[in-house]
Amino acid sequence: MARLICLSVVWWLSISVSAFAEENTPTTATAEILLTDAAVRDAVIRSLPYLEDAGVEWLEVRGCMSCHHVPYLLWTHRVAQTKGLPVDAKKLAEWEEWSRKNSLAQRNLYRLQNYDLGRVDEAKLPLAIKEKLKPLIELPFITQAEFVAKLTPLLTAEELQLYQATVVQTAERALNAPDRSGGGLDVLGQLLLGSHGTDSGLASAEFRGQTAELMQRLQRPDGSWMPGNQLLSMRRWSVPAANQTTTMWASLALAAYEAPGQKRAEAVEKAITYQRQQPAEPDNHEWLATRLLFEKQFGSAEDVAKLHQQLLTVRNPDGGWGWRKDAPSDPYTTGIALYVLAKLAASADAAVILAARKFLLQAQQPDGSWLTPSKSITLATDETRLKARDEIYHYWGTAWAALGLLETLPAPERPGS
Image: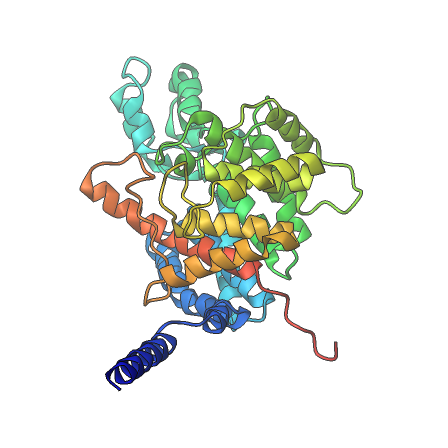
């Protein structure tokens, strides 16, 4: 009898523990529900207010687009709109129009700044001449003729003869200066990519034609494009990785508007030739993901398969990607990797995409954003600078997490389809 009672107690305890586990542990079905398209849409919808607030603040307070804020404000909202998510179309159109005008206004060949004058030796430009030039400070000029026309009344004929060449040379903006390059090369490419296939004014033939022409002028003789600060001086990247990644994104932006079968633009062909001659940088996982997207557009099936496998191999056990080998997963790099894999649309990647979705959904903050700590990415070590970098990567990482998730969603069904 005692043995029977003991066995009964053990049986009861095992049933109770089993029931408790079933009640308190997410089942496979529950986990699948958390990774559904509905859950992904909800996560992106919750991220849009953060992207709007921080993006609009950057636009209004700083008055510039910057490659890590305003273009991604537009890109995320446009893609969300195409996926059927609720987006304020009026606000989006206003942000895009501001960006269009801002970019067009920053295509100036000449602008004289106090900083520039301070760098010129007085033997070349006396203080008295610098004083006379003050009415020109910060005025933008698209051509040299316009600049000289405003300069001429400020100086005597003798002064013009002696100093005009120095003043003109001082005022000429560097090729990749944001106020000469439409806000910066990265900005130009993002405006094109983020508006592609939409009715945005940024996708109009006029704006994209002007932008493509400017991007071609910014291309270096070897076919590459110069990286901006975000990919080089602010990050612990090698110069080759920064040059190549910048060049690949610029190529993808220009090629996005080429019709099927159309001869590639000369600038894109030069960029492809340049890229083929460069050393691989697979330990930089953002480079790796971008290169995979680049080869999907311009390369062979063999190259795509090889890079595809490399990207899957460097994935972390938690389903995400870190920016380099042995780095912890972050939303920024995971978002880019997920975006690229979704573009490939390989059926064999379904489990990988689900795992990346899970990582991002679990990493989302209560305010809808995703944190990407800059400490392991940036060159900065000073706490003040790190705080500023954190703000940038917080926004940038949120944007790429949203874009990656959005790319995994199907297009909404059309009425009557």
